[in-house]
Amino acid sequence: MYGRGGPAAGWAATLIITDLAAKIGATVVTAGKEQAAIQHVYAGDRISDLLNHAGRGTLLVSHLPAIQVIRLAELMDLPAVCVVGGGRATAGSPCQGASPEPEAVAAAQRHGTSLLVSPAELLETCGRIYECLCQERLA
Image 1: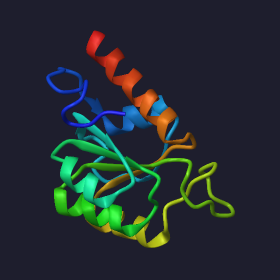
Image 2: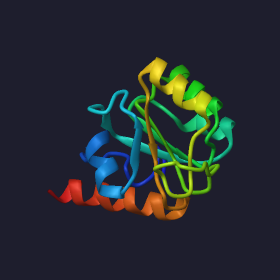
Image 3: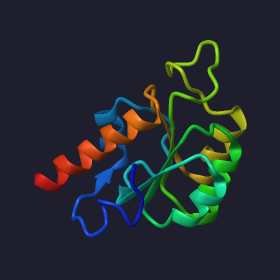
Image 4: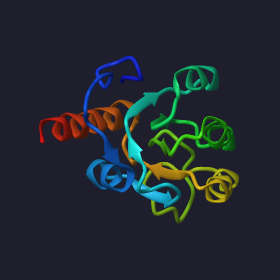
């Protein structure tokens, strides 16, 4: 996992949210700023850590399917949040293994935050994102 100061720092690679979602196998729950470029990624589950490491152009990756993560995205003007497979499962969800709380989905829609759900766990999701960034950098 990496954040603003990690391997992505100084790289020319950026990804559009819709392209990234397709490449990592994530479901786009709310479209929001889907054409925004992701320049940084930060993964974690503590709101204080997310707050300290998030910045413009950052994709937050977390197990937390709660509205607090969306509110953080609003506060920091982040383009997207990706909830990973450790989230709360809901019957009938199109996402296998994770589903954000309905309040979080509504808040993301109101604010225009892209909300993604990855069926993979945190480590695997971050690995997929890292591979995408590496491929983009080499392209």
